[in-house]
Amino acid sequence: MASDDEDYVYDEDSGEWLPASELAAKRAAADTVEVRDAVGNPLADGDSVTLIKDLDVKGAGQTLKRGTVIPSIRLTGDAQEIDCRYPGIKGLVLRAEFVRKR
Picture 1 (cartoon, rainbow, N blue to C red):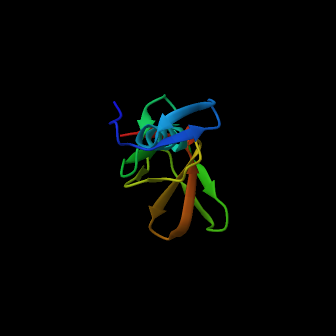
Picture 2 (picture 1 turned 60 degrees about the vertical axis):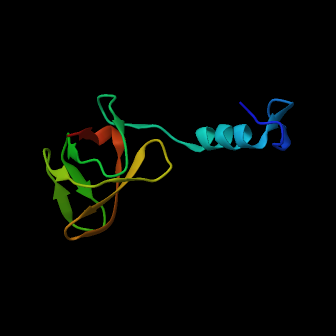
């Protein structure tokens, strides 16, 4: 609940005057993107994932085999892409539909 001395800010989306802290929390919640793996498990920064199919890596001349473990992923803000590190491959970005949370 907002205290009496808190500033109110006009929210153009809803057309209402809201306490500044409530509006900030509402905007932060709207900015979060939920990323889910191939079977529907939610993914978070730092999770380890396993590949569910063989993937040819463009530009690296490598194929990542099914069952390969990718440790410590990072979310990119896109609901379908995750940023990864893997030995010998720089800038690896995987689609969430091809991984399963460990």
